[in-house]
Length: 234
Length: 386
Image 1 (cartoon, one colour):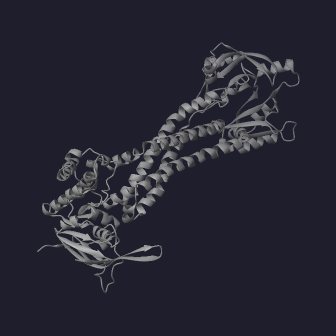
Image 2: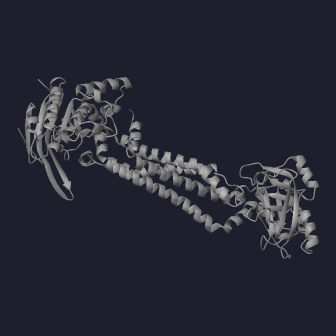
Image 3: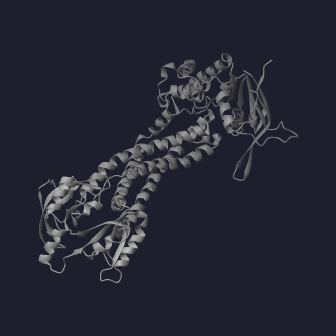
């Protein structure tokens, strides 16, 4: 029996725009077992990215439930109730458990591919040699060992996203969240990225939650869920 | 890679902008250093004053003389250890623009009151014995390439006539702040000339220098001296040497206040220059800070990145500015008429003030960008277009 890596219990999220309340997610409950590859689909503004951000611990749901019903707005990821963590603890938790892949790669332009991948390891106590081994292994995994010293502007979009994937896996997180990882890529590059994500799931047993508009990308996932007007359906 | 490498790479991201900011800070620090040096030069006389010296002058104005006969009466006042005197001679040596203090002094006692003027004992003895001898400061000797035995012809203006003095001693300043640009000669020589050329003006001295045994009794001794000559034809005003020097500085009070004000306005300008750069920098990088936070970097890391870059720019700018303060100050001093400021050097306090201003500006300029970057929600930062 597999463990539930991600559990969301009656999660709602409302944004405030001036004095206007905008409900984005409404009573979402979701479980993602360990090692699953889940794709979240839905139209723009449906709350996909918001849901991903909540799972990743970079945003907070609405206020937690009362003593009478504590299982409201509760997010448990890898056994940790994210609502109990302060900002610093949450940052440390993200660095240990989460790998991030963004639509626009979000590499630091002043750093080489090697240095970008090394970034998450700056928060660890690994020796310089160990860091080098980790970074080289991650860049080998994405097939960019020969581009280590290249800056992002010297790489194609697909290559940049592969560097971003290497950065996401270099600290060996348990979960990878990917927000439209193929959204800015051509078909060939998008296929390469999806193949890589599949490998991360099948060979490295990573739990992956991916937001996408792309049905071809979603096909690679084990499970596809749809968000519509803040409500989740299979 | 370490965080400080990222700080350095960030600084080098917009090389021209960073260079211009560094240059702006450097020029401002240099201007600040120069202005502080000018202000300090004005106060050099006050700073070099001795606490156990009083100056007794005419109560109406420094330009009126006092009778020589006061000397013995002052010497009898309790608390007075020694009395000597001097006259402001002025005159012209070579060129009216070549200014330095030329004083007629009591040759036997004057240097006892000024131990900060270091003179070879045998040279001092020669000076005391020869009526037309003079002692000059080391800087005057260097400026005019004067050696022992050289003749200094001086044309009198306050005391008209042609005077010739023989250099018999060159004094060295004991400290950097000691004035090494004075020329001292025998008051008796001047008095003899006056007796011949302007009968009736002889027997007068410009001011008395009173050495007191206990500096804490300066006020009582001053009062006792002035009481001696109250209601006389030449009433006196006695004060500490520092107060006497300060009265000269006060004559230029408005200029000095303006320079003091401008020097601190310059610090404000540096702050605006660097603050503008850091605000632009942080605004451009909000998305990157959000990514770093996403990866687990803490508020401390973000503060380190922004403050580190701000400090790096301000410290480099400050160091460059400080480095060029010295040649600029020298060039400025060279451009002034000789002897304008007897002591004109970049003081250690100016170096400390310039350096600490640069560091302070580095910290202050980072505060607003730090507040913006740390208070920004990650999700908002990720939405920003860099």
